[in-house]
Image (cartoon, rainbow, N blue to C red; front, side, top):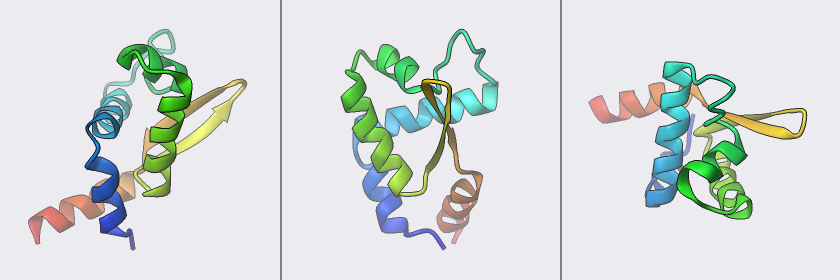
Amino acid sequence: MTDMAKVFKALGDPTRLAIFELVRECGRDGCTEDEAADSLSGIAERFSLSLSTVSHHVKELRTSGLIICEKQGQRLYCRVAPEVLEELGRFARA
């Protein structure tokens, strides 16, 4: 079971919420590799943030269980953890 307090705390930051939404949209729409919006460098470019700032926000999203990251070569790609979205949906409907 997901710790909903951690989830809501992570999403309570506007930048993290925007990053989460971008990763979610990319997963749903199937961003091309050229867009790479789901990679840390792609996220940093989209929001004009430093890689270290994006890394911090992604770490918080990972810790809360909202996203899953996987390294491919030198890039780190993120995707939404589907089970957490399901739990959020159940929580919202309850």
